[in-house]
Image (tube, rainbow, N blue to C red):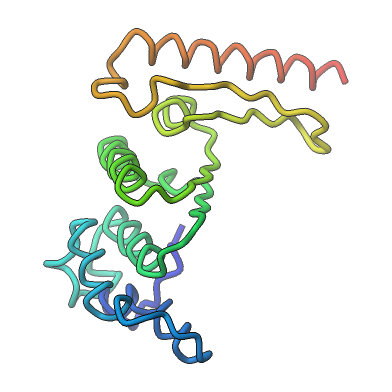
Length: 179
């Protein structure tokens, strides 16, 4: 839940960390990926005005945004997120979910999100994969074509998809209990 930020480094220094490591190991990241690139991502995630603060001087949501900016400066092909918003309050969580949808639309980065939050899965997932207890031998995939539509969170389709997902999870729980 600490987002891997270095407490002695500013938000900007943390955002540059991946690039510095990449350059240290001799991998040329290209001219476009530099401090300006990190500054772009800090601006994009709403942290430009906090770039000189330390992690303990910003909120949990801002620390999450700093970690996200650090990752995005590396132009990843895949973004793996394991319960990234679980420690955030409801409004901050919804704001981060909105930001994730926007960033996905802008970058096209493939995102794999692990969550136990049904509404979050429906809001963010184009394809929702329901896994049973280990060892998992078969996953249930729920297509979610409404994801990404304006106003989806407040729509009947959103509610219907959450009901469908709850049903699949309940069936999975029943199956596990009888196994």
